[in-house]
Each structure stands twice: as structure tokens, then as C-alpha cells.
Image 1 (cartoon, rainbow over the protein chains, first blue to last red):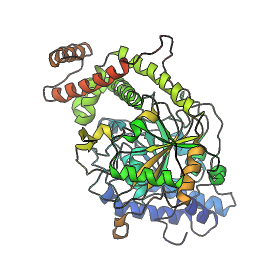
Image 2: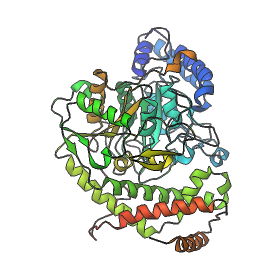
Image 3: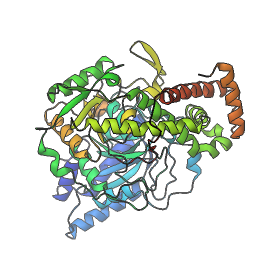
Image 4: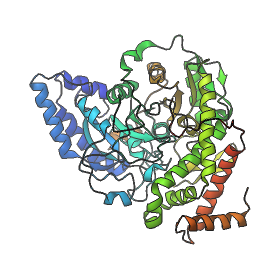
Length: 468
Length: 61
């Protein structure tokens, strides 16, 4: 890494800081300057923790001078979706109501773990209200804007996470994914995103959405950065009852293992319907690069998506019931009206959806006896225009907001680990899902890494980059 | 599938039971969202499942 750190990956920054080529303080100042210059265009950050970042960077530089070994993320600036607790900030979760909360007393454990690896938190990021969103639009904080075309959506609900990484404000961000909220913005912003296995990373000290389906994970511009951050965050956490008791299973040492011997398939049926030409092109490129000839069908994927939709609306409504009673006018109407409807769905139907989840899980897991990973689209199209309400999928006009996630929902529904890898189509990138069996994140990361080495999956630099 | 009238009656009754205020201006959107949700729930409900199947509220991979 030379001088300008704006386009540097997290691993390049960490190597430069560890090697004494640049200080953590200089990297931090450069990141803060980029945020000040670019955020007015991209609206990715809602809070910038400049003084905290400067203190942390100074401490890292002092520790290095004193001979302490640097961590794998030494001096790497990162930011988190604003539903993660950040000490000193109210955890707003994209909502007007929550910014009245008292400031968090303690950071999320994932922030603590990244900082223990040497990373430097520089702020909190825009998101769709209460994470119930695939667009990146937010009536309280303003819409997040796609760095590849600021007139377009970032995707959501981890909208600022997508914009901040694609826009080169930071090389690393955290987000959440209940139905696609890491994979949709990764796809529309042209970056890498990892949604690990359900229960892998701690959800403690954050504002929840749907306990049955919530996941956290990283965004980055390289597969290696995803793996480094993910490895740093793994491990049990007594503060989160959903977090599994598994010890960390490092993926970085396995990245270069290649894909020889892996049995790969492309998802057909439901996942081949409704695709716009750009999504088909991205899948074709990935399938060709991986020499995939087999198509596999995830049984009843449409019903799985329906069940995920029902569980989301009803569990979300349960979480927000008191706010819907007392503060309904303070919600984004697009969120409120869906939550109110969710509150009215009979519990008997929700129970059916949870039973169906078990059935579908068993059937999909059986597919992994035959294949090691499955490729599927991440979104049906590249980034829609901000404000666009509908799009045409297979000749049917559908609302954009709930349907950007039609291909991600049936996968998070059963907690499978997925890397969303960006295919750099012009003028706009689009992602592809690489889906692995439970607890086998390293398979998806290895495939993503191989695609990156082949030049098929790349986080493209936005054309606007030189202008701001 | 509920008719528009029965959906209106259900919406009013359930919202009342839950003490949820639904202002007239929001009602068409809430009703449309409820119709979508019930249609999706019906798709799930129509699928035959074994009685003994355990639900997966906390999923274990």
C-alpha cells in the first residue's frame, strides 16, 4: 500500500501498519477525511466517532512502538450498521423512536472482537428503519445512495454498510441479515458480503428484528478481508442465547485451498425465474468460471420464502407491539403498515411456518449429500432508482421493497452460510450467492476467493471515485 | 381466502382485540399488506406436514 489508503483493502492496510510503512493514526485521519468529503454524497454514515477513532489509533501506534505484536486488522478503519451498540451512542436502528434511547454503555461484542484484532471503529451507518427494508431508503436519516450511481438504491437494510465499503469510505463494515440485508446491498453496491451460519456470530448488545432469522456479518472489497474479519469475530458468547457454543474455525488459512474436488451446482427452478438479463449474465459468468454443469432444485423454495415472510412480519410485529400502539406516527409508514398487518396474522399460521421451516431444512440439507455448494442469484436486477416502487419480473409488475430479496429469503430462512460475490458488469455490478452447508463458511469463502483470483468476482471502483 | 368484506371485519376485530390504532389514512395499506401476508401464510398452510414435525423457532443447523 502506497500513500493513498482509499482503495486499499483491510489486509493491505494491516500489513502496512504492521510493517511500519504507515501509522494507524494516518490511516484513521485519511478515513475521517474521506468520510467528511464523500458522506454528503453517499449518506452512508449517521454517526462519525472521530475522537474515539483517533484515541484508538494513537493507542495502537503506541503499542506497536512498545513492541506489541499487531493484530490481523491493525489500523483498519471500520464502521457498523447503527443497530449495533456503540458505547456513547443511542442504538437508533434506523428509527426516529430509538434515537431517544439512552446511549449504549458498552460496545457490541463484535466491535470488541474487531478492535481486539487491531481495527478502529470510525462510526455507525445508515440503515432501513428497524431493518425491515431491502431498498436503503430511510425517511428519518435520508436515503443511502449507491456509489456507482447516487441516483440509485444501495439496497437494504444494511444500506450504509454497502455504500461505505463500495464508496471507499472504509474497507470493512458490519451489517445484519434477516432475509437478505447483507446480500442485497452487497449485490447492488458491488462488494463482498458474508452471512454466516445462523448462530455463528454473537447478536448480543444490538437492536433485534426477528430472533428466528437474524444474522450478523461483514462487508468488504475482497474475500480475504471478509475472512479476516469473520475469523476475528467467531466464538461463543454467553450474552447471546442463540450464539452457538462452537470454537472459532479459522477460514483464512483455507482460502487458497482452491475449488478442486468441490461438487458445485447452480440452483434451478424458483431461482431461475424472474431474473433480469444482468442477473442471468452474472450467473453465467460464475457458472462458466467454476465449470458448473449441474442444476439442482431447492424443493418448495417459493413456500420457504412465503414462510420467511410470515415469520418476519409476525415476530417483527411482536417486537414492536407497544411502539405500534403508542408511537405509530413516528414509524416510517412503509414499515409501520407492514408491522401492523403482521400483528394481525393468527399465531396458528405462524406455527405452520415454523413447522415448514423444519421440513424445508431437512430437504435442503439432504441436497448437501450430493453437492458441496450451490450458486444462486442474489438479486433479480442491478440497483433500481431511489424512489422506484415497482419492477417487472417475468412480465409481472411487483413492488420493489419486498421483492429485492426473493432469492435471499429462502436461504437465510434455514440459516445457511452464504458469500455474496460481486460480478463487475457495466454500468452496474450485481452479486451472486455462494451457498454452503451449515458451519462450512470456508467453502463459500474458498469459492469466492477462486472467483476473485480468476477476475470474475471483483468489487469495481465507482466511476465517481476520482471526483470526490 | 377472505373476501374484502370479511378481511375488513377481521382487521377491525383483531386490531381492536390487540388495542392497535389503525388510522383511516393507513388502513388501505395495512389491509393490502394483511392480504399479502394471509395469501403467503395460506401457501404455507396448504402444504401437508407430518403432525409430529417439531417447529424450528430457534434453528439449529
